[in-house]
Length: 209
Image (cartoon, rainbow, N blue to C red; front, top):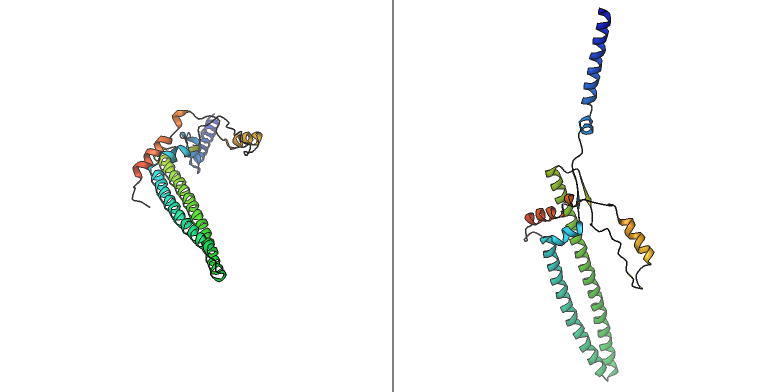
């Protein structure tokens, strides 16, 4: 009887040691802990509400207007050159004027294309920077509040189609929108879009590049 008690006590000790060992294994604490909250963010909604985006858009609009004004000036100059060319009667002078007109027209077209590419590049850079800034703000919010997962959700559940003859077939439009959807439902209480907007607007300095 005494020997049986010793065996039972020894077995109990081994079981306790085994449980302690498992508890000390890497990742065991993470496996035991419950997951933190989940949140969703509407990226487009955040961008619309950002002071940073509004300032960037204003700068791009100003640059676009300046370019359009320069386009009008150059086009007026080209029209004047063309009228002068048409009024010439001397063939030698007319040939020289035609070569100059062609040269100016080529330069204008090259400049116009360069300006379009430059504006497009700046818009792309603006969107990329906003996206990076939003992702940084979302991570900062998640770290501060113990949020384990933040999903992008546009909040739209309806399928929208375009009946314009130039648009893709309706079936393709529907299939494409369904394929893009990743979240079937998100409760309004986990939508943190406004929190991200407030966080970013508070941190934004208009004088920053």
